[in-house]
Structures are given as structure tokens and as C-alpha cells.
Image (cartoon, rainbow, N blue to C red; front, side):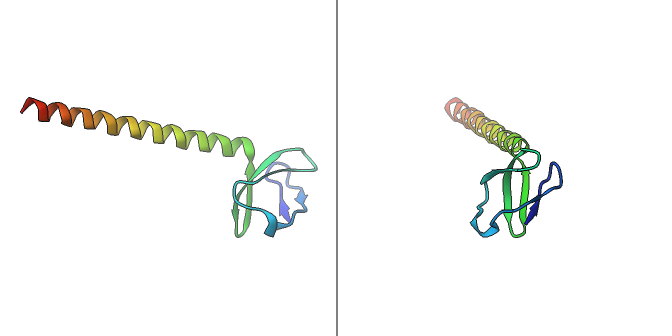
Length: 81
């Protein structure tokens, strides 16, 4: 048994059948919830989970761009010498 983070009602699920990243819905409020962790079972509103994931992907893309810019600068310096 786990509590809905949106409405605090009990959600009756088989915890051992859930995996991290699984999505389920609350029978009481209809919220879409994502499993964040299994021990203990932790849920988060799916919208919040997607926003976090999107931000992480944006940061990864920025890191890749910074790396490419640095590599181009180093290559230009090597060509100059």
C-alpha cells in the first residue's frame, strides 16, 4: 500500500510488480503517477517526473555543446601554431 502524493489517498498496488519509471494512476483523484524508487516505493506526479527528465536532457545537450566548442577552440589553436 502506498499513498498518492497528490490527494493522500491509499493506492492498493502490488509493490513487487512495480519498477522504477512505471506509470500508474490514482483511483481517487485520477493523477498519473511515476514510480521513482522501489525501496521504499516512492511516487511522484508524472508531470513533475517529465519536467525533471526534460531538464536533465537539456543540461546534457548544453554540456555536449560546450565540449564541442572547447574542442574547436583547441583545434584552432593547434592550427595557428
